[in-house]
Length: 397
Figure 1 (cartoon, rainbow, N blue to C red):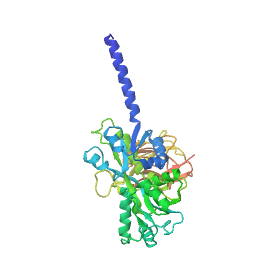
Figure 2: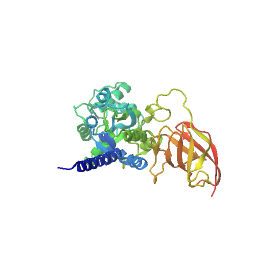
Figure 3: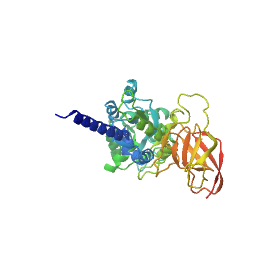
Figure 4: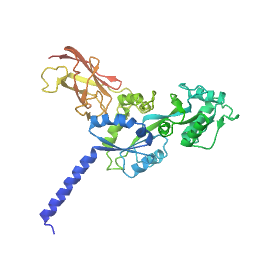
């Protein structure tokens, strides 16, 4: 039997193990996401920079069971279509914070390479569907929910063209089976772009994604952070940081610019603009009306090394003031991006965005762009659409 001192040592050892385990867990963000963002390559493109900038590591689970995992405490953040069957009951049960729109993927009009109805690259899906109907080109119905709903919208908007005459083929098929039937008949159909691209990898049929760029084809996705009072073990801080990163203008622009190998048009569409301005960091949460602009204090730009020395191109400065950011976060030192996940804050040095090391409402640490010329430069803090006073700083060698 262990002595009291031995028992204390064992308990202390267990406590240390638990503390280290909790600290390690706090650096991991468990992301449960539906298939397409992972399978389409988007997350593999944008998550590494989040990890470098914040020090968090993202563990991704991809599948349709995302809300089941969240209910079981196996996720910190969920990303799914807004219309996913699990969203409404999860929120109605009070298990998640308010959903935020992050991006959307697309249904597309798929058709034969010969494109007899001439719909390729049309900007208007309604016109594309009208041309298919008018030319009596064969169209195979995809009875999967969202493609069928999209087809019904296009049919209504196109003036309800007659489905008689043999061109409109409702064979009771869904998804891959509908696409396969379209390939066999040289027909058009509607399906999600990501699953169609993956289908092509395994089934080299002569169908192509022909019409892709109409907003009516886009289906939005949301992120949901688990409620900390319901899931006390969840890494809510990390989940919120990842959500804010996804909403940043720089990340949203990157989402729009992402391209699938061999595809020359957008696969994903940014949708953060559909959130509240407060959620985007362009206004404090819960406030109404014009928001206070950032303000740099008099003498508030100083050399970070000793706060008295001269400031040279490439040196680190501290900027003091008020309302400089809506959150607090630190960059990974090697990366030094010009915007951090917690706030849409930038520092302009005579028109050049400065690399950021740290931002908070009262202080920013930034690097003067190394290419800046000697002499007077203007330093301005820009937080979303609000701009601070300009402070002149003299750069020296």
